[in-house]
Each structure stands twice: as C-alpha cells, then as structure tokens.
Image (cartoon, rainbow, N blue to C red; front, side, top):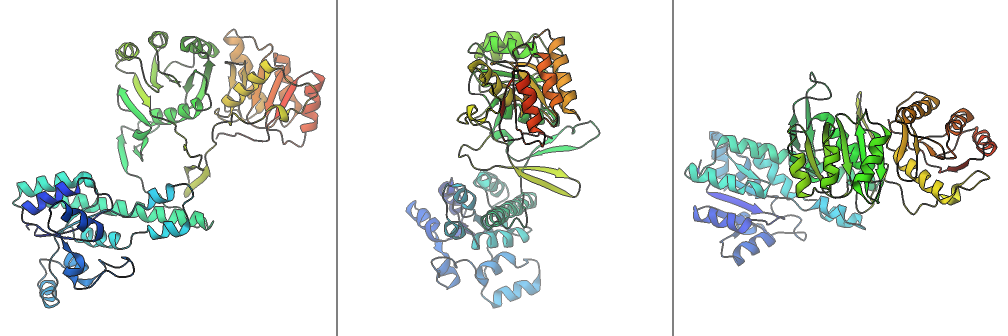
Length: 513
C-alpha cells in the first residue's frame, strides 16, 4: 500500500526537514504538531496542523493534541477488514500510513543535576508512546519510525516500491518501537521509584550490541547488551569474547584508581601486577616483575598513551587484550602484527563524571541483585587521621599503603596485597581464609624473587584474628591498611604495636565477590 499520509511529531529533529521534503516530493500529505509543524513550514514543507485534521484544538498546554479517534482510528483500523473500513468511513477516519515520532527527552532531563520532580513529570510523553504503539500494533499496514537513523531505509524502500514500504521493514521498525517504549517506560518507573524511595521494581531495557561466539565456556550461549562500545573501541584483532569483556571491565575499574602513569596486568579479572612510573616502560617492568607466569594470555591496561618502547616490551609475551587511551602510531603498527591480539581504545572514564551513584546489576537464581558501584578511592581522603597504632607511618610507608589499598579493592575476596610505594610485590586472591591469601601473596613474592622487607600489606576486609597481621609482619611488612571493625580489633592493633608496625583502619570494606 502506497504511503499517502504521514503524521510527524518529534523532539529530536535531526534530519527531519530533509526527510519531510522527500516525502512531500513523493506526494505524501504531512500532518504535524506544534514546534515540528512550525519547523517544517519555516523550511518550505507544507504541513497540516493536527488540530485542523481532527477538528479538535490542542488543549491543556499541549498535553492533549493527538489523543483523538481520528488519529488512533487512522492508525489502528485494519485495511483488509471490511467492517473496519466501513466503520472508519462512517466516522470520517482517514488512514494514516506513516508515523514519525520520537519522545520527550525524559532520560536526558532526569540525567541533569538538580532536576526537580515537576520537571521530570512534565517530560513524560503521553501522546508520543500512544501513537507509536498504535502504529506498531498495526505494522502490517502502517510504517512507524522512532529513530532518525531509519529515515534513509524508509525512503529507499518507498523509492523501490512505488511509494510503499516492505513488510519486512515495517516489522523491524515495529519491534524497534516496542523496545524503545519499553525502555522509556522503564526509565520513568526507575526514576519515580528512586525519587519516592519505593524500590518496588526495577526495569531494564538494553539493546543487543553483539552476539558473542559463546559464553564463559564454548557450550554456553552469550550476547552483549547495552553500550559497551561507547566506552571501548576495538582498533585491532578478533571479536571480543564473553571473558574478554569481563576482563576489560575489571581492568578499567582498576586503572581508574590511579592518576599517575600506571600499567596493570590482569588475569581472570584479578590484578597480577601493577606498577607506576613516569616512564611507562619502567611501570611495566614493575608490574610484570610481580608475577611473570600469570600474565600469559592476560589483559594489559595503561592510563597513558601506549608508547613504542612499552609496546616492544609487551610484545615479548602473549596477551589477549591491550587497553590504552590511545596508541602511538609506531606502537600500534608493532602490536597489530599479532593477529590474535585485541587492541582497545578506552574512551574516557567508566565511572559517572557527575559523581552520581551508579547501579550495578548481577543475575542470581530467580532474580537480580542491585547495588551502587564501588567508586575509585578518593585522593582527598585523609589516611593520616585513621592511623590506629602507636607508630605513625612514614611518608614512604603511607604511599605504599595507598598503593596497596587501591589494588586490593580490585582483587577477588578474600584478598591480600603486598606493595611498595609504586608497585605490587605479592597478590593473594580469592581465598576462603585471609591467612591463606596472605600465604599465597608471600609465596608469589618469593617465587618472583621480590623482598617484602619494608612493604605495606593491604587487606580488603578486617583481620578477624591477629594471625594474619602477624604473618604479614613475619614476611617483612612494616605497615598495614585494612577496614577494621572486627570484635578483635584491639588484639590486632596490639599485635601491630608489639611488632612496631603502623596500621591504618579505613572504616570501609572492599569485598569483591
């Protein structure tokens, strides 16, 4: 069926005038509302006001303008149903063959700092979703466009089909409508739910951005949803795997802890070496020295442009993914010789720049867990005021404590990290016992030929007994950082004092399950 009549009412006017001109040139009558109609007429495109079409004025400050039987009847009646056709004619309902609508910018509005509840409510679109749903329900006869990116496809189909569109295109566009209105309604529900502190429901609607070859294991199916590509751009290599994506996310969260030039190596989302230095090659040497076995097939990330010198060092081992804000041309050319290596450019921070509480979702049997994200350590936090031992740490020890604390919060629990002021020395991850985590970290340092004498030890949660701290002291640590909060804190502090250790209790735990 040839498109004869279109209803156009949009908030995002990108490409609209050009699209409408093409429709007009094909003989399509254009109905429109408010600012959209004014824009079209200003640019020489004839547009009939919807109020003239329906015979009813816009009322209630524009809250009611398209909620009319002549609009929804024209969208919904079945063109091949004799009864519908007769009823439409009897009621003066004319067919509307094309709907071009995008919605009030509710999500952009509520993302603004200081937005009021009243502002949010006024940006809840009523007529737009109603028209979209009516048109999408009747996709067999009506073409519906919710995204300006689809204007070209509609015009191409009309040109190829004497003014009509294909059923396949209408089906695709109809599905896109319901995905968009679902996301839109979910955003409204989530905002109002949060504003009223009701926590009665959680709505999530994310586009599928990639079908993955498989999940954690080859027998598992997997897909990526959302906007991962807005944060990471693949410059080279094979498609990302499910495990690659998890590792990249963990790596990005870790590197955000550091402002100074830093290189980190991860394996299975756990850090296995982190080093900081003005010279990135030196930072790599520090990180790699922590553990020279685990990095094979791992993830490497830096928070500075990756240099050729660093690229040459990295290229000596096999890596799955290398991530950087950018790559020197020579570094990129060198690394791209490895066809199985994926190069990723990180585009900005993975954390909210506005400091808003971000939500983290995790599936569990029968539902989803939700929490706020564990944000990067605050450089302004005063560690000196949290010293609980008789001895204050030296400035060098304090730098080592801060380094250990930044890393240990990114290690799977139970976690222990031994560190110097600019590097990790031993990492113990994911143990059922904190003492075992410490033993593994000590063993890893010994295996790497690194001395723990004068090191700082970081624990992601409190020492439940003095034994963990004593083991660290015996290994050579002279200072410790931990959340505190154990019923035996006094015993742990006493053990530190007896050994002349300095200890900071942050009051903040960093479990990572």
